[in-house]
Length: 110
Length: 112
Image (cartoon, rainbow over all chains, first blue to last red; front, side, top):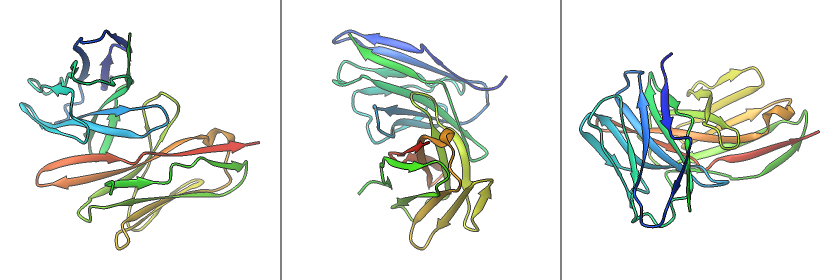
C-alpha cells in the first residue's frame, strides 16, 4: 500500500537533547511538508521541500532542522534551541492537488 | 495578518441544524482550496476541494469567492458525527513551489 509512515508515534525529549522525527513516503511525491499542531490549534508550517536537496523555511522554523537527501525521506530534527517542543507533529506530501498525511508523532518533554 | 484565517469557534449547534463556516486568505495568487476535517489528535482527512463554481457532496457545500478572497463550507442537517475541527487549506503557489497553509481550524460540536 502506498502511504506515509511517521515514526515514532510517541517520543520523549530530555532537556538539551536533539531528537529526530522520521517521515518516509512511497507515493513518489516530490513535495513534502512538516507541520506542528498545539492543543486546540491548527497546523503551522515548519519546513517544506519541493525536491531532493532543497527545502524552505515555513512560518515557525526556528529550533528545527530538516534534510532531503532522498525523495522518499524528509526527517525533522527538533533541536535544543526549540524551547517549547511539546506538540503533535504531522508530515504530509502533495500529489494531484491532494494532501496525504502520516499518522503523526506526539513529542513530549521529560 | 495571517495568510489564512478562520473563526475558531466553537460552534455548538443542535442535531439537524445548518451551520456555515468562512475562511479568508490574503494571497490573491492562491491556486487551490480545500476543506479538511480533523478529529482529536488524528491526521486531517480531506472533506472536499473547493472550486469557483461551487461544489456539493451530500450534506456539504463548498464555495469559493476569489473577488473577496474567501471560501465557505455549509453543512446541512448536521449529525452528531459531524463534531470535529474543520480546517481551511490554501495552496499558495510561488514560482514553481507550492506552499500549503492551514487555517487554525473551526471547532464544531453537535448536540443531541
